[in-house]
Image (cartoon, rainbow over all chains, first blue to last red; front, side, top):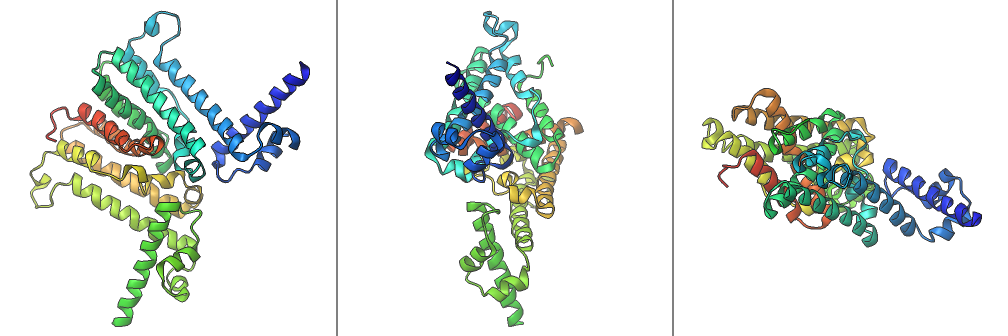
Length: 198
Length: 198
């Protein structure tokens, strides 16, 4: 029992360390040895849990994706009170998703992976990134359907909403000004929901 | 005279080769030696024109930026007939900019540089990327002002327009589906200019 708990803790420490290093320096340049040293676990534990860098990367990118989806669903599905929409109008929940404060200058932990050649060249890793955006777009589309939009318009507008967030990160990083992301989001929200409470 | 022309041709060949390699594999992993070999020019010419990789990168990224700005201005400033707007309404010119067909799966040649650590860590290179987005945003803002928007709204909406294009590239690359970019652009245009001729 104690042994199992220690094992779980070690695996988690390796995953969170890999997540942190991937976010700061990219997947390609991050070696399993760096993760090993930064996490402080024993070498045997690393190879026990993750025989290859691919295995470690899939686990770490997968964890980053799950955390990002959980945050998005919290915005898009309301307060989880059991009351559908949690008392907040569907369109306002999409506004809550796009306007959520983000570390604009750091870039999106998932979106940036699409420019990481080490990720895009690895089918398993790329699939994890693809699944994130497919599921995120489905969640935004569903909320816009709830708001009364026809299927095609909901799908297109969901793509625009997610693109504005991703492009907002690009603009903030490119200009070194996090207000660039806020301006993009404001411009989009003024068009999407001119009457949104915010 | 002939010598000068040959020199110009050699410099251009180095720059276009570097542009191509940067676009396909990133700035960081591209060595001057690769550019030298792929361009077929003599080693002396490379070091004559570009003593360091930084010099070559600034020239190549600068050329990519100029080409991208020229394309954007062609959309945003109309047909160049001397008639302001070239007979096309200002809002329709912004629509022309965002809907222009793009190689979505290849990613934006400039936008992707914001995820290239070798670029972002080099002040001179980063400045070239920053200047691109500052000038592009100014051009879109000016066209939206022409369309009658107040300054703040024009600025925000210009950020949203450029972000949708940049985010559209991210979505297309992430999902491996170039229609993801088209959907984002359609969703945005339906909000920006519901009556746009297109």
